[in-house]
Length: 114
Image (tube, rainbow, N blue to C red):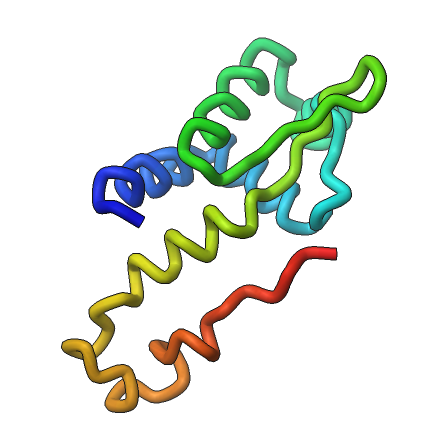
C-alpha cells in the first residue's frame, strides 16, 4: 500500500459514522449487508449512508455487489490487511522480533471473513 492510499483509508475511518459502518460490516464477514439494513441498524438517513459508503469504498475498505434490487456492502478484507501491513511495515525499526508478537506480520494477518 502506498502512503497516499493509507492516508485515504485512515481519513475514511476517522469519521464516527464511517467507523460505525466499518465495524458493523466487519461483523458480517463476506455476507455483508444491504444498504437499507445498514441505514436501519445505524439510524442513518439514506443519502448520508450513501455518502459514507462511497468514502469507504473509495478508500478501498468496503466493496459492494448487486443482488436483485439490493446493493450489498461488505468489508474489503484485502484493503484492511494492506492498511495494517503498511502501518506495521517498519515496526521496531525493521526488527519485529524486538517488539514481540504484536508487530510480527504472521501474527497480525487477518483471518479470511466467512
